[in-house]
Amino acid sequence: MTSSKREYIPDSVRQNAYVRDNWTCQLCDKSPPEVKLTLHHIQEVSEGGLPTLDNLMTVCADCHRYIPLSYEPTLRGRGTTTDDMSGRTKIYNTLDNLLKLCNMVITVVLVAFVLLALIYMFVLYPRTKDTIMQYTLRTGETCQ
Image (cartoon, rainbow, N blue to C red; front, side, top):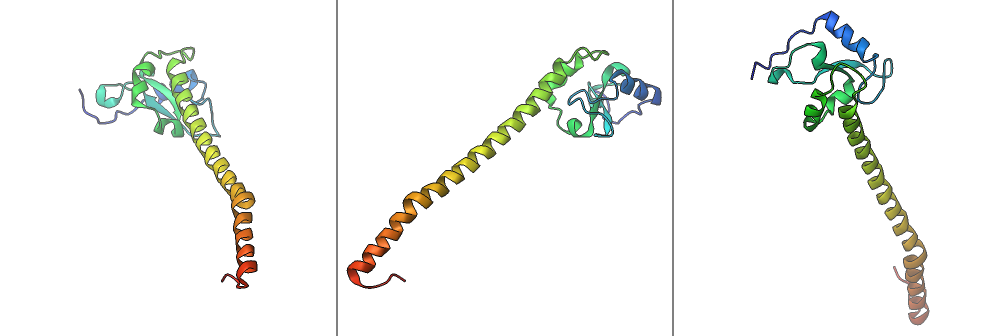
């Protein structure tokens, strides 16, 4: 294992990586000006990864934060072409599934809230109102 000190990525390698990847994030397919692009070391610097074209991939800053470490071995097999999308697809699908799960949980909570409100409005509230009215009629007293 080598030092975790970052090595400078030569401008020519940086430019070639962006051109090879068509100036597009390899995880979400977004490109500038919609996102800010950066380069991701497929083999981490701390594991001996070098700033070479074969070890770099273009990603946006948002996706770069969420690259799961478990997908690193898949990304390592990526090569230098944009045709091999197995790692990208898995990561994108994971992020997409997480977003869908969050949306589903929010929907379930909102539906439950609406159902509880409807039950209260049409079942519990009328019964409470009827009970108060019956008590008032029977005793002549008002509830306070």
